[in-house]
Length: 311
Image 1 (cartoon, rainbow, N blue to C red):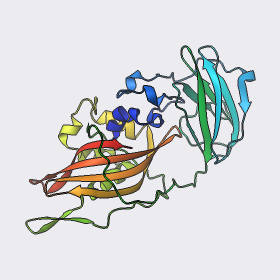
Image 2: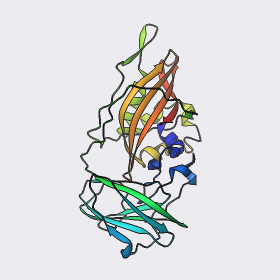
Image 3: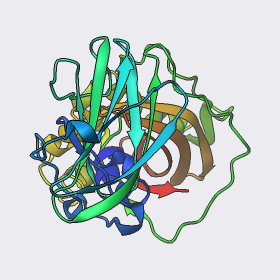
Image 4: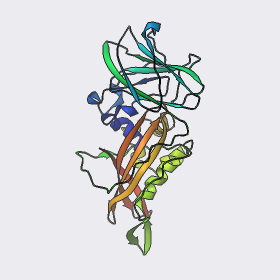
């Protein structure tokens, strides 16, 4: 439920989630994003623009982010060459609506953020029509580098103007062998009881949902969603296939920094979570989410109802 919601609604928050699994990835200006990814530039699987050797600049990439600026048009693309070690991860982002392709030292399109071999890599920036300037931020991350841990702070409820129906699930894959520890509220069980039996904390439902995704148990994660959300054509136009398209094919893993129960009563609960999405293209984006949950009396469990992206 968290996943397709982010796929369709997330575009108004950050361009970092706007990517595809092929070697070419689109990026978009966050000021022009809408609630549907259909309005974004659809980049081809392979660039048609020829990269002029005179337009290729050699750069030195490290864990320190650098920003390169330039101008591209339909007939002119720009490229950057850098050296990297096998296993490093290329991280990049831009706010402009351009296409980006990454080539391996063997001149093959790179389909993930992890660099497979040691050598010189080429980043090509191009556009399908018109012309535009761009600012591209890039850096390399060591494969062993764990995502940064965010120090939990005293939670505050931030009201937003609208509530979005909960979407599909986001993942944290097993390959992230050293995830940052998840900070949770002190309570494991809520104070409400039913027939003298303690209810499990709503946060456990969310943590279990992400754990299943991170362990590639996509069907089990999907089954956590209520039927109403599974059959929502806006969130999952192709049902379970849409869910897989997002979490299995586009998202690498999700690192949860902090998760806690913000408020609850016997019927409703709100869980807040801060996280970072690591995409297969090498991009990453910090995401804060609110989960709205409802107690199912007949099944004696908390169910996901809605989710909201917050600043």
